[in-house]
Length: 253
Length: 130
Image (cartoon, rainbow over all chains, first blue to last red; front, top):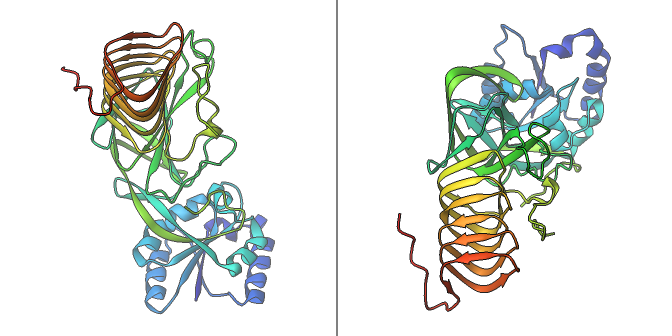
């Protein structure tokens, strides 16, 4: 049994026609199910938990990366299969999973090709795609064994199910690890050209990492903004079963 | 495709396999660094370095550490003992201040070695004293 959770934006006028097409297509494919809409006062998490007890097998988010972030912890707690119908902008997770936008995604859901992927944890918050800090923290400690010290300011991105670079060939959400990408400006005389001419990337694969900063820093967790001064980052290997398209950007190990 | 070339610079990010580590210029690492994948070091490292696969040390890199790897290509400076299980390649710009233990050694003209070289598997390079 499928559950559908629509993002708030799905109720807005620009999406009305597309949502209608999606609902018709789901019915045609025989995978229509109960639906709920995310909203300020909606108890969608309770809805998912109750339906899980009644035998629901799959939760499908109709929305974007922020919709996924909103549902992720509940999905992991109840252990249901997760599907996604991308709607509107900010759909990087769908792109990596190989799910096309809009009504065509219904056919991908129906085919039900699945993969088990890792989930990242930042303090008590889970994330599927990435965490981004526009300003690098003062201290980064990996695996409790070594410190990484950026020379000057930069940014830090912690990736799970997201791309780095243009090729996307290095998306690896099934290796039980995360990747920290630390960007700082290249130095004078380096092969990267003049000082400040471009950013260079340090890339570190890890299972656990701690970051600290004396002042509160802003960061984005799967596109959702939060703030803090200390972060423990870890990974839950193979925590989520997701429906993917045949064009997904990662290979099974 | 190899992640290394002979000019001392790493290839594009696209060539990196998942799990690879890159310590770029402008970043310093202090402590006991270990990686299960390939490693490229272009920045600074102090402590110990253990690379289970390939290790590449770029021409601007400075390593103050005992280093172990399966294979290694060195173009920068290493101050510490170097234990490479299979093949070690020292490029023209490399400087090693420490003992070397490896099975196969390639030394380019201009490379500098200040230390013992051991190629007998029965012998071992003792850990460098702090």
